[in-house]
Image (cartoon, rainbow, N blue to C red; front, side, top):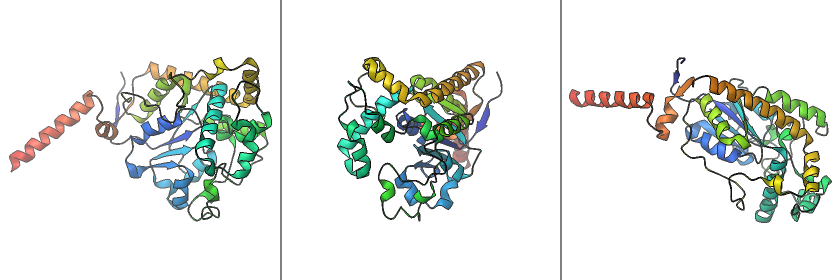
Length: 320
């Protein structure tokens, strides 16, 4: 067994949250690893409050559906990179159902012209083929999140759209840094970035994915994995939407998410290689701070740390 590297705190990290892959749950787990002032959820509300020159001061970034250009603004290539990918048809159905729920509950959070374009999908029950044009205009699948290059600077404090509130309405109006209609370039960008991730998790392998991330950070697996932002109609842990779709709808979604499937296959291959390496070696990093703060189960280094604290307290007591 090789030596264990000891650290006080977990190394700094950046989590790219792809929509409807279990990212809210993972973000909650990782938030607990870092102190409150060390972490930031990069959504548009928080970005509007943050001066751009303070972006690089955090230890954990949870990028809510944001792409590589935001990561590059931070200017810290040493950050550990994590993301999650999901089987494309499952993710597409989950995204559609979430979109329908959100429009019913908070329609004021969307641009009116966007809702008009998406109207054919609002009453869709997945029993008949989808409106393909509406689907393509409305959804930003996995390859788009990782592959489209956008300028995020206008979203930070002092940006031109922040005061107007326009940047808080979905979909967010960001200046493109590439031809956003060039699907081949978007896929190529996504595949290149995927090669740099320290862990590419897979939603269908959630527990193993989380174990890989915990190993990278030197923290213990949580005793229980919560389910956050899941479809309230779901009864079982696995959605298995695809099995219940009519064949015509499944075939259509499969075709619409063809680029996502290329990305998912590559992500799955990387995950399987990472898991094989993990099984072949012991954990290499131990982060004391998060383990002590989270009250994890007693393992040798934790017992040792507590024993040292007790001895120090006794010495202090005798000194009086």
